[in-house]
Amino acid sequence: MEKRMYGKDEAARIIKSGKSVILAADEAILASMPKGNWIGGSIPYFIGEDGGEFTKEKVYVTEIPEFALSNEIKVYTADSISAIYKDAKNSGFTFVIIPGFSKTHSEFAIKGPTFENFGHSPLIGWISGFDLKDIGTASAKVVDGRTGTAYSDGAIAFHVELPASKVVDLQIVNIFDQGVGDSITFPENGFSATIAVVNGIEVNFADYVTTHKINTQLPLVADMYGALINTSFQSVDCEKKTVQFYAPVFKGIEYKIGAPISDYVADFTSKLPKGIDQKIFFSCNCILNYLYAGLEGKKTGEATGPITFGEIAYQLLNQTMTYLTIDDAR
Image (cartoon, rainbow, N blue to C red; front, side, top):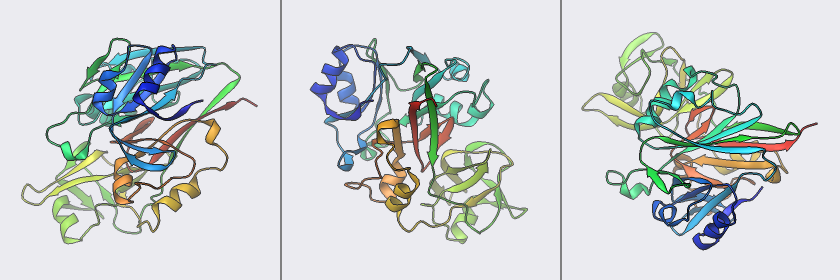
């Protein structure tokens, strides 16, 4: 299963050869690609073969395995994204890309766990983005390679069917544990919060974060369905008394501030099983890990892939690495 960085001419040749592929690249490169059976998302940050890299000249290409029985591209809107789990093949997985800060991003993030057939089959993907220097002027994109159409809202997916001789495993690598501090809950779902309940007492959350000098590079961590799920801080507005997040908090779920991390790279590497490189179909890591850990030029074990504005492993995640392996069934 080929998955690595290419120059744009090499990527174009792969598309023209008729292969079904997933592309991650700067928006301008995606716009230059020939039409074919591909989907893509905008991003200029990657973990490549030589480590973390910012580039607007290369493309990360993930090939759909040749042994796949079928692969179907489907475009979703904010109104139809609820069908993504229901549309999955009976045997295989779904790969999806959603533009960051779009209506569909919000709809999927908040309501995804309530969608029909949630969790019944592996769903992996990522949130597309842009050069962080262009915040306020740029918009994230996803592209349907069959037509070359780019969307700043919506979602683009590959529904991949695999033979019974193959088995898929979707994993979340979260180096954060819940800290030993306060218990925090929220009265409603959302990407922002004004009020929180801390140890049973209602407080203004912006005031709480400020007065307790919370390190907002550490996410809120919740135990959801037996997995530790992060929600990362985007901003704290002391004047408006609001806190913005990169993923939603959920009503009634208990959160704790994440425990401090001493060595991001070592922790990621230690949690990846050895010798699985050839089995990994796709992997991605979070832009916040890239920034906070200074991952430029550094490797995170054997995993390569785009650095994203959010990771998708069944639902939206923050500050994690996700990966999907395909192996022979025993």
